[in-house]
Length: 284
Image (cartoon, rainbow, N blue to C red; front, top):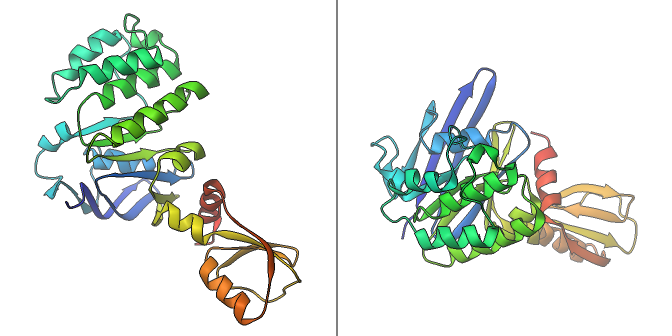
């Protein structure tokens, strides 16, 4: 099976902001985290994917069909924006009636299960709900659409910790229910650490790269050396004193240590939030 989504050289200029070019793919069975600093262009990129904003250059394909060829593909994609516009006057029950009729594979049992698990009130108007409860209802409406692709923009913002954990479990179960794929834009390191297989990283509109999360955690390591070292090692990113060194190329660094008879007392893989920070602050 080929990629669900293929993006090539997508670019967009808005005033003095330049997004892209961006390239990445979403393949079945994976979760991709869209990561970046504030104003990096994450939401703009997602809106381009949903054909809500037109790109200036590049192409996007869904299931092998160009995005430009109509919008029939939208029934196969569930999109949760940061904020639902125009819903404040409707109750949860009314929103179910409005949304479900547009999705042939609407999963009412999944929706009801999420409502019960997350304690979502359906009789209150959306605008009267707290921001966290609005997010819960929005996610329930999104997952129940019965699609193979989820595109989620900051889905767990404003939620309490127990609700986040429940939603993590729901998303994992959703992924296990078939050939599915998720794109999640998030600032939350826990979301990324627990859910993501791949990271697409943006910095002020620039596409830094697309990475496999496990490869990053294998290659970004911190070493405590037995003796001071003055020369630079392969992939060195930072150092504290002359004995604590961080590299983004652990394999090459260890070959260097072996060749130069340099021993280390301890080694640790960096946490994903440390790695993302290093990627975002590296010089252009």
